[in-house]
Amino acid sequence: MEFNWSWFWPELLGSLNETLYMIIVAFIISILIGIPLGIILVITREQGILENKIVFKILNIIVNVLRSIPFIILIVAIIPITRFIIGTSIGTTAAIVPLVFYTAPYIGRLVENSLLEVGSGTIELAQAMGATPWQIIWRFLLPEALGSLILSLTIAIIGLIGATAMAGAVGGGGIGDLAISYGYNQFQTEVMVITVIILVIMVQFIQSLGNYLSKKIRRS
Image 1 (cartoon, one colour):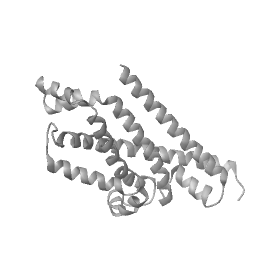
Image 2 (cartoon, rainbow, N blue to C red):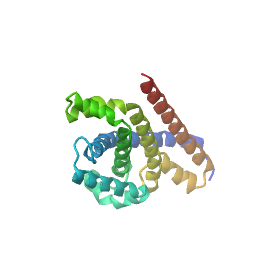
Image 3 (tube, helix red, strand yellow):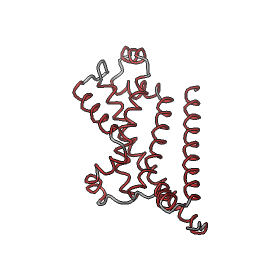
Image 4 (tube, rainbow, N blue to C red):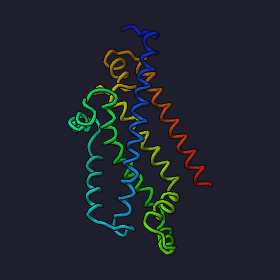
């Protein structure tokens, strides 16, 4: 099939908009779930400031289970949940549901690891000053781990970009759908090459931005 540039650019622009829509909405929702999840995992673990073994074990198992399922299988496995929430399992908006299920536990685990990097001396100092658990989290843990948290969220959003490309395989739209439908199925090499270049540029930009912000915060 002959490549048609006049057809390609509007299609590419529309697919790019769909990809950005999926990334932004899924990332915001995943942060709102993942950051509190990571904090709870830290404070309820053994010797945490609000130790609760039952809560920790339940959340730990849920995170491990969701992170163990490959994204392409997760999309299919939660179709009933996607239909319940969105009303359909096909389309760009519907793809956001499995993207959140995939990304939120991942962010939770990354946040947990970042917060655990904060030395126990900082928490002991906060407790000695009479800080409440909320004050310890908000004024000591999160500020101390901010540089690491930014790098963790950078890793998460890059993983999310890869997942949106896979969402194209099941009708999720976006750059991945364009690459599979025309680049792979119709052997249009130009489409495949351009879409891959766009994804690489997006990842490079986000990684560079994350590195810059993290370095700036750690120096300040």
